[in-house]
Image 1 (tube, rainbow, N blue to C red):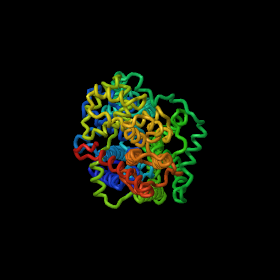
Image 2: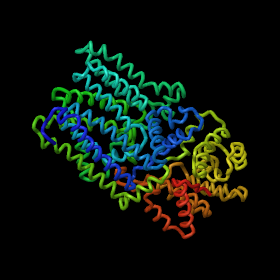
Image 3: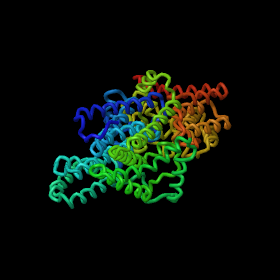
Image 4: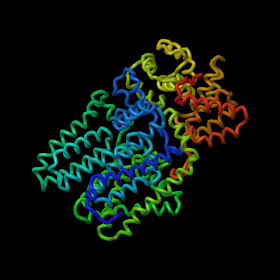
Length: 615
């Protein structure tokens, strides 16, 4: 870091040239994780939101509002549109999806850079950039998920804070600033409802400003309201189109929790601490310095003080909402569960940057460097551990794999849009066939789970309805009907296999495969498929079951047996095949052959090569 300079030192070109270097470093670090096949792919709804992007391209004939994964996740719908744009240019690949995530990360970095530069000059900007690029492992991983929820909503949190800071620090006369800040506040609320808290902080800033610059506020507020109205237009359109569903978050009471808040918070804190190394615990303890950094910045005059106050107010409001509402997370078993805590990391990032800039001005430069370099080095260490847990042996080959692997999944997406469409199953099956899908079996899996997953079905019913819909291969759907069988016959695999054996002989092969393809619940983790394999072996399941289970194993991600979420893990089995190969090799030869055949068939179905790999 250089000596203290004003925020505009070096000129606009110099500032953004330096930002470009930080952005390049961010991209290199994140692409290293993706190209190493790390644990950064397709958790929960990432591929389903990408399926919404495919639906936007394929023109299904449904209203656009019904194509959203969730009506209340405006950010998710925005990301689906971005997915569609990149898919149209580069193909429907995982590589394209990661490009969306990295690009949004760069946008967030740009907002953070500008906010820090405005508040504390180059020193503050460099501090937050370093801590952003080399963030804790969970933040690095989260930044690679193209979801459009808590992490990416920080783009608008930062933009509204930047506008608030600017008007409080002498730019209240700039009419365009009021307009753009209002626009960010309105569209940000559509993007994520967490912007309601940011907008409350901004409103408080306006009230403070009104006490000393009443005339500017009277002229600026109507412009901000006009911008906010325009920004809110997408939310208004979604509410008009979908009704109360736009506010029905997960179908739950936002104030209710099944567990006491004290138990949830203690479990959360315990999972952050237990199992850590000495270095990691020291880094966690260093987080306690964040409020002190904010106080150091607050002791300064000018923009540093103002931003520190805004951040403190927002952090307090967020903490109260997080504890008071029904979204408090308990024990963390996977980094994905830290999504809702991303704003706290963001506020800590800004407070630390402001404190570093304040210390630098006061001449305590060694301490300032320690406050930046310490956490950044921990971030570098986290990155190295994540890479070591993956397979960074041939990044060029990995890039080719990512560029030729589908980044979308139909089943859970169709489960969402089916009920919202108001269509009967036959009509909905006709809609589903409008997807321009090269692999009919890939689409059949979505159709089976999306249309028939929540009901009692028979082969005759499926064949009759699909015949009416013009679907030529009902058997491909029947082989994917495992969710309906689980719902109808119960969760025990042995019992389901016995029920399948009691059906007409011509149905056996498809039913056995369907039971293996679904297993015991939707989302396959390593521990779960190993238990399902053991249950199949104990029940003397036929080859078709293990073929279906091999298909399921291709999609394995994560392992619920992990005691500590922060222990680095390899990527999904579809990319990092070491765990699958070890498991298959330990089975009898005929079982191993069936598992490998299913696994390889799943890989063929997921390959973007323009050929139909369906059987």
